[in-house]
Image 1 (cartoon, one colour):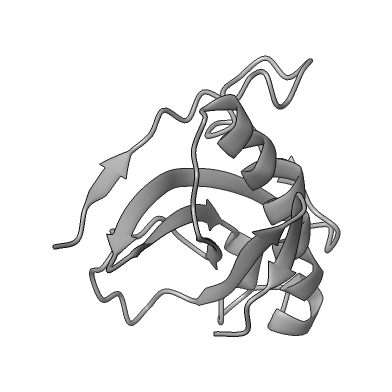
Image 2 (cartoon, one colour):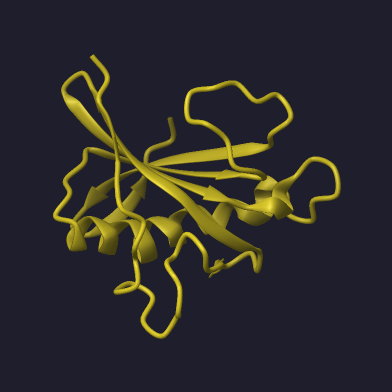
Length: 135
């Protein structure tokens, strides 16, 4: 059975100097687009635990967006290493797979939204480094 837990999004310790929770403050990524953390989910999938870091990235929108997948590609590893790994450490989380997702709008996890543009990448952590999983 799938287990999903919603975690606190208070990441002030990760973003010292910012006056708001990470869910309210834009995070700068290599593509130059501002992204916001929507939520962090924990899913038990069989024998593995997947940690899902879901971000809102309005600039990837099909209509009116300025960032395509090729431009956003470097953002995934950055978000995994600069945000997900410290988050896991701070909240004492363990996971087999880290999924970083970008969506042009807030969406409900697992609910279809044909209007949304979404990009996903998965990683495994090896020696404190995010290794692309290529799912």
